[in-house]
Length: 145
Image (cartoon, rainbow, N blue to C red; front, side):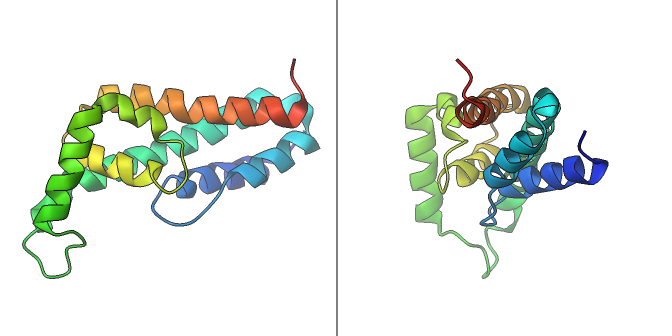
């Protein structure tokens, strides 16, 4: 059985991977899956929970980000914000099913907060997407049939 520190490390890795920082949690998950096949569901649950909670932090940051749009350091122009809003509105909340993708997924969760996506729908869609990714990774790693 894995030690508590392994589970905590996986949670922190998955949480951080959902941020805008360039962190990956997949390699750690694969290593832990291969080290202890008995803990599959615990590992998937912990990785999924960490990743979804990290995305929820992005949503929360996005929700309050616009309060600072008049500041010089604000990272996006009004034109960029309008373009992001048009794209999000065009594809709708279903685009959150792509939140598992590298590069575009994490900013998408931030934009959902900026555009006031309801938290319940955000959590369901992001939860499905991120948990699905980890399930697929586990299946590929362990050769589930």
